[in-house]
Length: 101
Image (cartoon, rainbow, N blue to C red; front, side, top):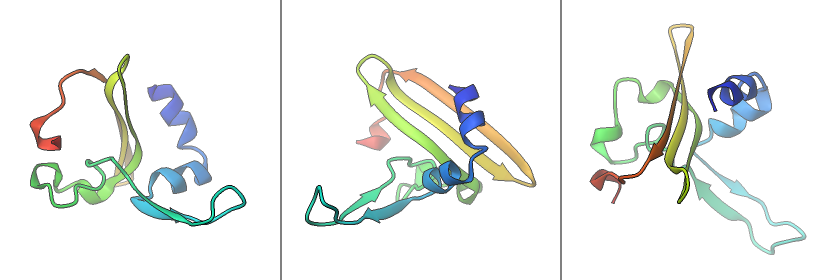
């Protein structure tokens, strides 16, 4: 997963997409109304959950959260600070934190 993240982050369009905390998808020929979305990445966008807010929150630029029964809770993240990029991949978490409830 780390190799995929490192490769994908080389592309400006990918970086632009995964850095978004929220947005709106316009109406189309497939749906009459636009819809709003908000990231589920609380590391990047902690909202009002204090435990997720750190001195580095503003440097987190993505990438993806997800969950399936097979994979558990997963996170791929990138932080850029001081001219350096740091990546973190967490996979297979089975216990959902009470902070998320």
